Length: 278
Image (cartoon, rainbow, N blue to C red; front, side, top):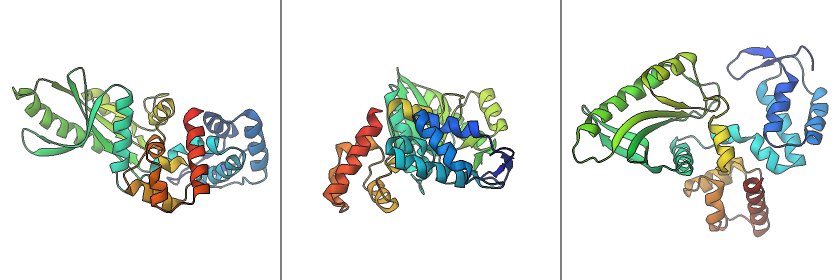
């Protein structure tokens, strides 16, 4: 696997680094025995010019045969993309994450601005301080959030902040705007957000505290991470307003509703239980 170049989803090519793949497998919780077996198997399958997507598919397939729980965690990034095509399930996930951090949240709130009315994806409150959270969901990993997005989000925030904080009926203070995405931010987007005080959260930002790590920390895995569900079944469950695995466990009747057999329901719930306890 030395000196092989891989094709990224954005068309760029970069040197394949085996240790980078090892680390991604390790983050899933996979034990060294499994990682070594996967790396050994992939040695004969990786070739110059292979896509990063193909490497992921091969590694995921091998890991799923060894341990479905590790495979679910390894596929978390893809599971977020699978929440689409609309951004609402992602907004629900972000709301749940903020609740775990001690915020009271409302999804899809209409707020008056000084100039126009705005729909805010998630309104979060803690200690009588309000935060306006905008969620930018993308269905493709190669789509980055450039500086135009935080520029737009910040202008909306300023408009509602002016109106909110001058309203004597409001006992809380609208303090800050947030922007959350399932992909990445460009360097300019990050620099602009730092300059104006807009808080950012993406898959890999802030470093070592991105959305993936937060989901792992609080066990807020989306149902799209479950390997025992088909793509069609995941879609039907989401259509029944169940986004998280914790919600599925509490509303398991939906699995009967979409006509999954009792034997498979048992397997699905077992996988959910293992994922939430590891």
